[in-house]
Structure formats: C-alpha cells, structure tokens
Length: 333
Image (tube, rainbow, N blue to C red; front, side, top):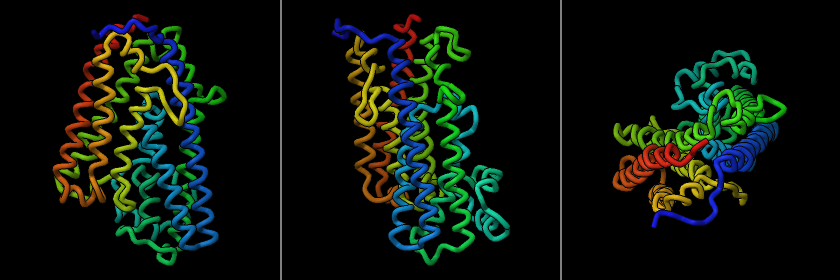
C-alpha cells in the first residue's frame, strides 16, 4: 500500500526545519569556510611555501564543497541579489584576466568587487592557485597575482557574509519571509508555495548539473567549458550539488535532522518517497563511477558520464513532476 498510517509531519514543521536545520547552518558553515580560505590566502602571501600553497588549495576546495551543497536551495537573496553569479561565474576568460593583472594598479577587495562577474569569485582564484595547466608553484605566482588572490578571497568572504546576513534575524531576515509562509509572508502566500519553492530548487540544480554543467562540455567535447578545470574539482562539484538537494529532501545536514519532505511524502505515498531516495542514491553513485578528472572523462569515459546524466535527469523529472504534483495535492495550507 502507498498509505502510511504513521503520524505525519506537518507542512509548518517542514518549512521551519528547512530554515533552521538546512539553510541557516549551511550558510554559517559556508561563511566559516570562506573565513578559513581568506586566512589561508593571507598566510600564503605573507609566508610563501609549498605547504601553505597546499593549505590554501585545500581551503578553496572546502569552501567550494560547502557552496556547491548550498546550491541545493537557490531561493531568495542568493538569486535576488546576485550572490551566486558574483562568486560562481565560469568559465574564466584567460585573456581578460591576464590583461587585468597586467594593467591594474590595485587589485584589492574593493577593486575586485567592481569587476565583471567573470573576474570575481571562485574561479579566478582557482586559476591562480593551480595555474592554467594545474601545476602552479609558490615561485610561479607573481606579486600582482598575490594581490589579486587576496582581493578575490576577501571578496568571496564579503559575498558569503552578506548572503548569510541576508537570512539572519539581525540582517535581511529572509528567514522570516519563509517561516511566515501562509501567515502573512510577502513572498509565499501559503506554505504550499514555500514547499513548491523547495522542490523547485532541488529540481533546478539537478537540471543544471545534468543538462548544463555536464552536458555542455560532454556534447561539445570542450574541456574549457568545465566548471572547475584548473583544480580538477568538477566531478566533486557535481556530487556536492546533488548532495545539497538530497540534504533538502531528507532535512539532514552535518548530523542534524528534522521534519523532512521525505517524511511528508512517505505519509501518503511510500512508493514515491522510496523512488526519490533511490534516485538520489543512484545519481550520486553514477557520478562516483567516473574515475580521474571530468576534463579527461568527457573524452575517455563517455559511457559513465552518459549514465550519470541519465540518472540525474531521471531524478530531475521525478522532483519536477511527481514531487510537485504531490505537494499540489496534499499541502492544504
């Protein structure tokens, strides 16, 4: 039977725990890691060494991992105020970047903030930390690049801090907009609207990964279109994107769990809940079967990548179709 007689969680509990157990702690984790990244870049600049370069690279990866999981809920200020494109526009325009470094008198955080989005954020910093061919050394990083790195890291931290603050009670308080869904919210007239936005966010990142991030370089066989080519972090980016959406569905992050969409679906349609959970696992597993880098896999592991795209697109169809239909049917407030 698809009917589960166990006590179901309420839509109010789901929306509340989405904010309290997913959004707020993940944005705080992202800010903490961006702070560590900024510190690691400053340490590298003041005390250049192979060990400090490796530490800065790892801090970049850690911040990147946190951010990619946050893309599982791209709703509210992250889109409204361009926080996403301000720190995660790609690919890098090498010629424009080289010209900037050669001709700019100053590349501090204020200067970086005034630049076009393709010259801000994670990927120009990645370009310098690893080099275009992925073999940067402490000695190969120039004084002007160090200045740019410092400006980029501070700009990322400023952007992430502003994003976190936009949800805080003491800041933009967007959490109140979500928490008052169905009770006076300016954006979500009903809790159904908020839950559909959650489902839409999950579906959207799956579509972006399956039909954009992977499909574009795969179809054109063009490694310059990959998301994180210098660090060869692209496959991990994709996995973290899907895990971020999975966190939302299960209402689970860093050992803490709450009232979930999964429990809400399970109350009336066990089969659909099991399907969604199985499809999340299948998509992540399919991505992990790709060995080596994404930049080489688009040539040498096309079957594995096609299988991954198929699994992600199947998940997307279920989230965008069956989950939204379920929410339209069963969320009454």
